[in-house]
Length: 138
Image (cartoon, rainbow, N blue to C red; front, side, top):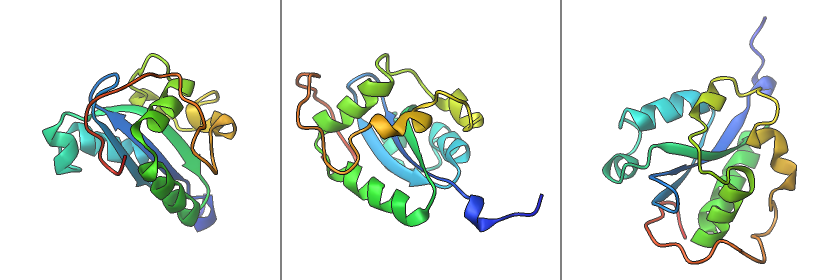
């Protein structure tokens, strides 16, 4: 199959150190490769220093512009909003890394992104107070 730039997908993702722990928001074209780099402590000093190695949320985008816009949007969100989108689709805060190996896995968070708060942050949060650090704003 011939490579087609239009077939590219981009990902916005959130890593966590543990449930309600330190969060990191990022964007990449190859989520599996990027998470492997984070887990190998080769991607980012922040994630390595604070053990932010668990992929707890991701969503797929068809264009780089859309992914960059969404990453910036999520980074501006406060911590409670980030926790809310994680818990909407991953209430147990499981490591979704194995899902990224087959990103076309039906039922993945990326497949269900239509139910997420896209244009505006959530207006209510039932997740309570959460402590810890957050990289990428909020």
